[in-house]
Length: 350
Image (cartoon, rainbow, N blue to C red; front, side, top):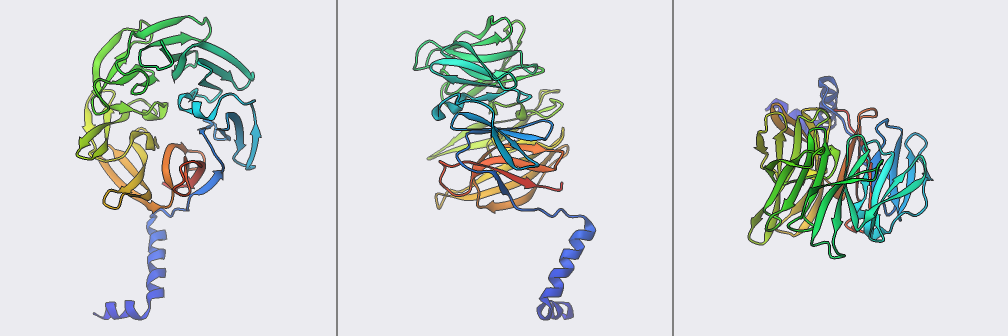
């Protein structure tokens, strides 16, 4: 009782005591997200060396120097804004693939050279060594009947890996990792997605039903040592379409349903067994966004800890972890106007 009376009479001392305990016990203290690059950003890439951010605005490539906070254009206009959905950064960030004028292209940033990779070609995935590119080749502008090929960028020869898709490009996902090419497509609708594993040398399917679900079209979908892969699936409920996050052990083949309603493209790896997950919250009863929440997730053993909740940042995706600066970078909107995306940074002492 005496302790309770003390708390009522001296709230300032209580708050200061809690803050002191937090410092002594080593609980993390977090800053707030800040906009690094504002404006209508279309895509960005964090340099593996941690020196620069590369981003696109209005079809032009820019380099953002993190230390000096300066932006420098490094290309001419390469593509139109509406073509951004087929833009793919190479693993090193030295090249970028995209589609324009019914043709696939690769731009070498250092050489400032633009090379065509095929008519009606839509870039989907880079090889780990950046010498080849998986493209979808449409038989018409409708893209409903398509094949997937590996294009060797040195010889410009190609190898067909998927003779014909069931749903065209719109429900296809491709990821090229060291273990092979992963290809996912909708069989009947978006709730029935099959993932296959393909040999990049022969083009033959190694495992037709490797998993059921879709994944992020980005090397960030797998852990640094390729032990884990994050993916998800759509579960149908009356009036709703739900995302469920899953994880696959690429060593044992075991699948684990985390039973968590978040998209797999809002996570990034901290280490081989830990990742950050950025959850775009949504109140279904009020039919409105609740803002951004961030979780730190461990897979061995499984557990998650909420770091932030309901921050007024919306439609967040493409997170990147800078281990050198211990900072998180991601794209999102500072209000609910989805036409203006910015690049945010958030220092985290994890």
